[in-house]
Image 1 (cartoon, helix red, strand yellow):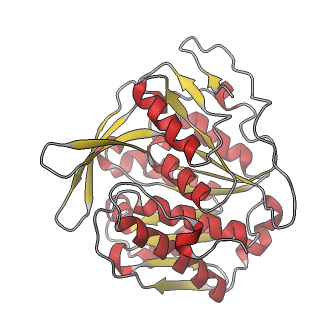
Image 2: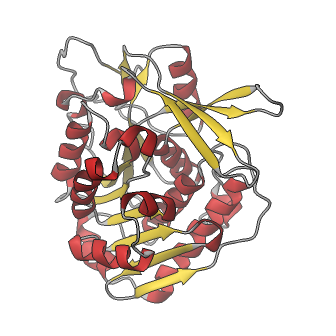
Image 3: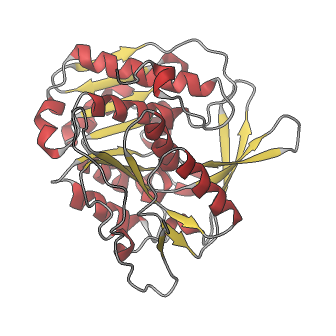
Amino acid sequence: MQPRLGSNEGDPVDPRSDAPATSGGPGWAGVVAVAGEALVDFVPAGRPGLFEAAPGGSPANVAVGLARLQIPVRLLARIADDLLGHRIRAHLASNGVDLSYAVRAAEPTSLAIVAVGPDGVVEYDFRVQGTADWQWRDHELAGALDGEVVALHAGSLALTMTPGADALQRLLAGARDAMTVSYDPNCRPRLMGSPDAVRGRIEALVALADVVKASADDLAWLLPGWAPEQVAEAWLAKGPSLVVITLGPAGLLAATRQAGVLRRPGRAVEVVDTVGAGDACMAALLAGLHRRHLLGADRRAELRTVDAVTLAELADEAILAAAITCTRPGADPPTADDLGTTPA
């Protein structure tokens, strides 16, 4: 199957009609679509100055995480038609991610250079000028949510980087009535500029979403001085049904209107690095909602009334997924067997 083709001239691209067929059999709960960047992380590889080129990008990592958790997933990404882009595409396809609506882009692959601190916490530097991920045009997204899609997840740089961020935001706004919308701001200060420059956009995206995940680091930069509980309650008031704030080794905070705000502890593990841990958490959260049939516009009332027991279960699964990822180098999310969530 050939991927969709893009061009610099803006020629229309017809939606694919040959996406893999899906079946609404017992236990099936539809496809999760993920939109955003698919780039290459240069990750330290054992000795100073040596790096491994590893496929990454927060949305791509979430898509891989969902596929490994046996959730039907398609990725809406602009993947470069260069050697690194071919490596990204092979990685996604080998993990079972549907690329029928990915664009084969003429622009080069975006790069992220990763530095790992003594505690495993990572810092990123980026090479993104004129690269593929940020050049979205509306016609490239035409038909991308066709079929039995129950949720659209998006976030990170692709929703704040011009010129393509507006097209993705329109995609989310248009999807709101038809499916669950999920959002992770995944703030990257080196590329997003000042908090004031992106706060309005991020809050508008929060208001579009049913499910929002952010990290304590995101909040410290975006809303300094706010406690995670304050942010969760403020964001719930904007419209989401579920807000999750990850707290690093301390676990996470999860909030809904009915269950209120709860904290769940982290898991003690030997950390190799934290690359992709938040994305594994996001994937496990969406997978847990999928397995419990809480995704889809027709399940919005049930999502809004999730009880405290279910919320704690969802949180614990997400914490475990993140912890497992931290024990592995790079973005290497767990499988359903790893989490003990394989269907019987």
